[in-house]
Amino acid sequence: MRAVVFAYHNVGVRCLSVLLAHEVEVALVVTHQDDAKENIWFESVAGLAALHGIPSITPADPNDSAVVARVAALAPDIIFSFYYRLMLKAPLLALAARGAYNMHGSLLPKYRGRAPVNWAVLNGERETGATLHRMLEKPDAGAILAQQAVPILPDDTAIEVFQKVTMAAEIALDDVLPELLAGKAKEHAQDLSQGRYFGARGPEDGRIDWRSGAQDIHNLVRAVAPPYPGAFCLFQDKTLRVLRSFQCKQRQARSAAPGLYAEKDALYADCADGRVLRLLDLEYAGEPLDAAGFTARFGPEKRLLTSQS
Image (tube, rainbow, N blue to C red):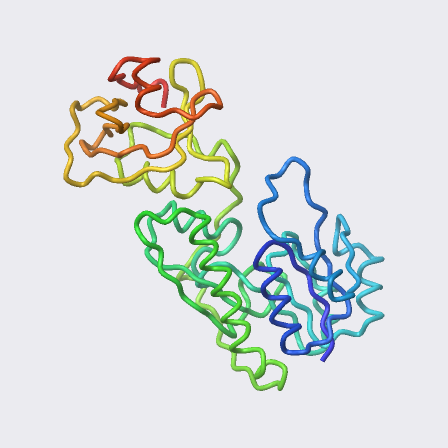
């Protein structure tokens, strides 16, 4: 069984590893050049391919005629896409004699599209997972072959959930691959009405609106916590980044107006719904900020104006 693999990121590394463990002949790996402007905290698909002596390429456009011709010359039985960031168009997908399959980081049909883990955390979901599905030109819409669910705990950050999803992808692929290679894997169509598409997220999407309730702010902090850009607001004309928070469910806000305050060695935020967050990890103007530093700069308490949200 010969495969061409389009892959990137940790899911790409782990799923490519599964193929190799099952002795699939991977004739070519198509991946991405790392972007110098991006925080590269994940493993290298290109490095894994090199370790196994598999040729790899990093085209700007996988649908370029030269790439399509190279893949066609390899006559792949299967094409896989594992967290590859660009869409594969119909001429490329049609080259796989036994079909083309993608691993998506959600329980499809929920959270189709971009940044599925971050969106699931932001929306307060208690479960997500990974789905192997048949690729169509319409993204994340093809029939499902395998799924593996994982829990999202109330204080999990996006990176912690992503690590679970990576393992879920590995389990789902490892489980279904023997049947897929034997031509016996069962598929079932998605009911697209049960989910929707979500778009890409950028740093500006981490801006905190202090008029929101504690749960929504906590979910935002979790969804964009490092290695993602982090939740932030403008505070005393400089950027305050909230990198980790905790809901104090037994604590009542001091005031109806949102505000930050230090108490002993801890920092807290009163939220607009009367609930309180403990701020576990903060940066102010690019430097770490603890309770002592907050008090020294601002005094023990500082109310937040909604214009600073």
